[in-house]
Image 1 (cartoon, helix red, strand yellow):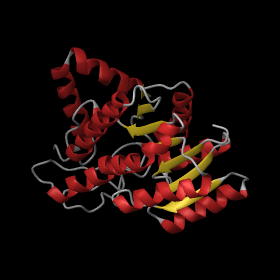
Image 2 (image 1 turned 30 degrees about the vertical axis):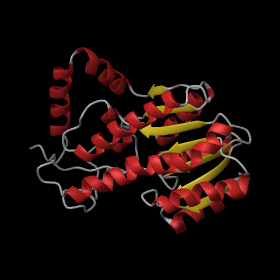
Image 3 (image 1 turned 90 degrees about the horizontal axis):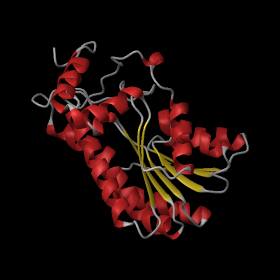
Image 4 (image 1 turned 30 degrees about the horizontal axis):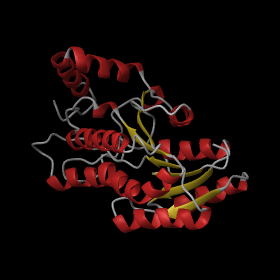
Length: 268
């Protein structure tokens, strides 16, 4: 990672923040992208005080002009881009029959179009340096999670986009990594959108028993070092991908039972 220029979206918390700290520790020049300006610049100040080379760019990935500005600002600052980590994402918790269509559109705007737009503008610089595009995804991209319609659909779409991008650029030296993190301790469940678009405000899971964001950050760094195409981090995730191929109907039943057993599940 020494002197690599890395853009990380959703860098103000969770996996994004942990990845920014990990890459900075490894010697990268890290561009922090997120919507919360004050928090983002507070993180920038903190990391600079530790001697790291970081640069904050306030970015709403749902806005195409923000994604373009992010890339332009990075190139103006550092002259190149080596790695783009598409990490920005939101979740939801509501049955499809109850959810407002605007909620599903919001999920796609962040989880899918945010990655597409950032990648579109960064691509020429990444190809030039034979760099890497990373999509931080989930097992929800392998199996439809009931109560998470928009989330699963956006992750399926993200997988399709990144796989196609990889194939299109086989002769250009572009590396594309899809990393499925499993359930990770973060605020994503508290901020998950409900049927009317309001935030859930609590987590239905035992966060302390989940994978830590720092573990995901280290896994991303390892996967980039070895140019991996796919990484599924948890045993549960690996089993999900396997059972999907050999016993898909059983997996659908298991997914229903698991999500129905969550506290205050919309399936009950």
